[in-house]
Image (cartoon, rainbow, N blue to C red; front, side, top):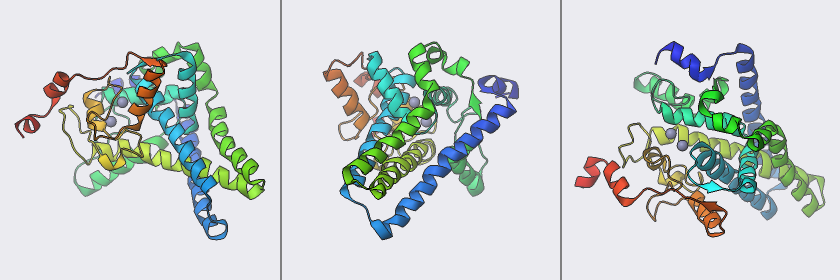
Length: 312
Ligand SMILES: [Zn+2]
Ligand SMILES: [Zn+2]
């Protein structure tokens, strides 16, 4: 891709890029340091079932916000839903501290438009050959791109969301949702135990450790799921499926399936491909809170299967 084209799909503004990269560093560093403190405190105060429950429940809710909300609904419109659910999904996704919904969607749509080609914001395949190129590619796709402060042009990639006043408001309040995601486990930890140390433990495990783990797992989709794993479909890119990441990524790691069928609300296309986000969408559909749920037909899947798979 020519430099001129790249400048159209990104916003070139030194001041804004510096601000974005600083926010990215803070967003990563604080949960990382909080995670170190949480593990250090294990020696003195240990961890109770309350902290485990706060970690798991906040993790599940915010990852569903990212995968069902930011990804399958806002980025790809793979199903339809009502405004309260849209807002709830946008708020839960924002609590994961991976950027506001419009920023996230614009980057992700650009990733699909230029997957593993120049213009892709986080491909691991554009950093040269050999071991060094592979290591650099892994780092860039996993976290490096996040710190570069590159801003995708939302006018090009997320115009629908910019025109949506409700989602625009949720997006504006992004930092409030991140703080709310930290406040909820802190308050629950403090109220249930009646102690300040309980509140601190709630903040550390339900807040910082949860954000840190979520960032690592979503980043693994960008790095591992474009480098290692299974490629059953001819998706015209380097995306892969990884079973071992499926539960933690709430289904996002069926990434080759997803790149082959980006409009599908279902990423785990076989019964054994665990995909918690699909379970959530199916429950919403059962409750009549989601409709027009897109799923590829058997013949569509057959048509995109790699020839070697059909022969096998
Ligand atoms: Zn991808
Ligand atoms: Zn996608």
